[in-house]
Image (cartoon, rainbow, N blue to C red; front, top):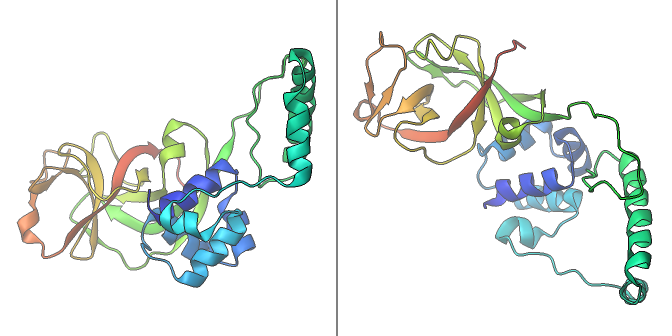
Length: 254
């Protein structure tokens, strides 16, 4: 994982929203969105330090991926020693109380996500509502036609239901044009996973001479799903890069 991927990993593990992280670190939401989506590859040292402090992890981990070494104090060591001396019944009782208190504290803070298995003593919980998460949404449309100039990297946030695709998505973009019809339409919102490249045949977001394209990667060309559009040779561009793999869409308009 690189720096932005480790930030997203810690953020998701602790259930920290972009809004909360922006407030805690003092980093503007737009700047944070660029970093999380990969538009900003190498943040300033002051930004990295602020993120590490806000996430409660070490700068060394965010920068190099080295795991933080956990050291127990005397009280924690004493509690661990007592726990290890318990029989099976005592361990279950302690686990139940610990889980209950963790859930209680987690409900008081939006910066903690509680995902604990159902304790054997607790009655069956009622069905929960779908969990919502926020992902960066970039205002610039990406072309499903002849290319759209990316005038800015300003982003806002949209709330989406948590599922396998939205969990993977690093940012979202809106489609402009009809060259990816009939599957993708003008105005559709694309879910994009930040990747430096895609395989031949995969759909991706590409930046070609400063213009954004949503196309199928053909190896040496960009391909439209609409047969009315001819493939675009990559040799016609001086600069070409991949910004991510398209993993799904949000049909609703925002």
